[in-house]
Image (tube, rainbow, N blue to C red; front, side, top):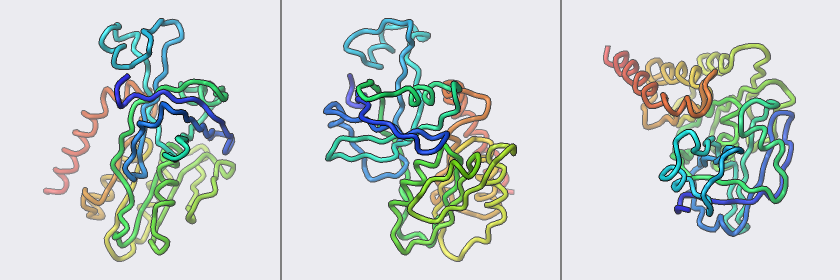
Length: 271
């Protein structure tokens, strides 16, 4: 197993809301897990095919070197909600919608003693304490990273926080006031776009974090970069997922999709 591969054991689980499950994993095998103070750290969870026999000791790298591609384990990217290097406990929050998807059902069935393999961590954002104010925007998939960012903000930092969820029962208690937007039957992210477009931006340098479904993220990226003039270096923005596409499918096209968005943006900024 490479240095970026980790084997963890489920310690406990908690149903945070009807559609959000917290899983805490740990164990001595996480002693090599290293983070650097970022609030958007993520790991790639490894899910093995049930009908495939894998080499032991298990390693994703070995699988990729020795097995046909269709037998490679499936990966799902999740934000690290919390990491305690003293207790070696890693917390991950999962959005769960019944049997839909791969990681959500796993989290719903997880019990103490289960094994979880993962790769990572990666990441690149933490709120700048010197920023004039902060803008944090996301759907449920971005909620763990937003929650971690709020915990890292200085007490006197100004922040506008918009989180879109299914409804009131999905609210969580966070460090700062949050504008919860209840989606209902509306398209994912539509309320977030409307909220940011309608926001009267305060004076001063903004440091923004906008993550979630790729469609609304694209709209807000254009709004912030082209219409609001936010410099790219003051913006952490990414489509965590794409409606109608699974994680493998989204990873396969994400780079080309991002390049197309950047090219379109550059053309508008230069016109």
